[in-house]
Image (cartoon, rainbow, N blue to C red; front, side, top):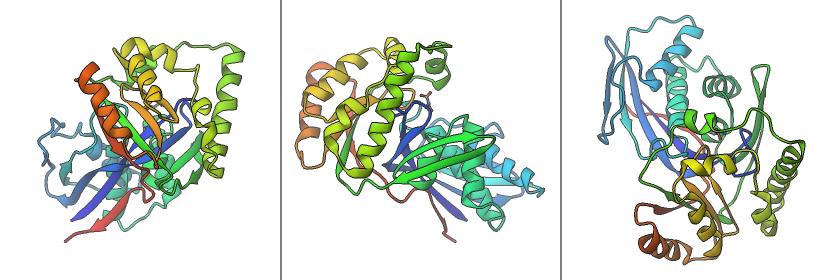
Length: 297
Ligand code: HSE
């Protein structure tokens, strides 16, 4: 039996639409072995597809097909800790787990770059899957099927308080809300900020974070789908965060907090209890390990 642990991820980080993401210290685990028939269970009791429409199964099967290996079936056990459809990379975690698990069962015919390229092709963009595999803060793009990426460790300098609402938002719906074209000035607005964000995280210049997560490409169009989102974002900053942004396609909001601020989470909880009791703040850190594959029996 193989165990694959894959971290939650937060894509975009405001300015880096479809190109920047970070791994968080919260992970899903998938256990997998070959079997005569496919049997899928979710140990944590979440509602996941139990047939061959299951994303983990489909991604595993893709690896078998690419490698020209027959697959009778897979026994898959899922442990889902990442909130689903909340902009925290739960579907990327399934994609990555399926690919890495099958690759391990086949004796690792694919290298890490092959897995990243395939995962990004399946997801359509690399900003969740690259940090899910590599850990850390990752800037990435995919061109002609290959993902070009750079990973920056955060070394515990930052905390991430994630405000998770009770409602879900499907990525397709959040992408459908975006305009087909954007003004040149908005492209420049984001380009400058994404570069500043990456550079600031490399150098540790945290004073730039607030302006560097600013965005005109997706967040302004998505707030209409996130009731309370704008208020939470303002409050997250007002409570003392360095910056705040919509996590991935939403609906969760992430506050980037200097890790020396030990009471931010408590202040965030008190704010939500009084104003938005259906939003739950959760303290996470940057996961520096990325996906971990182990043989457990
Ligand atoms: N970059 C993507 C988006 C992340 O914002 O739509 C969603 O997975």
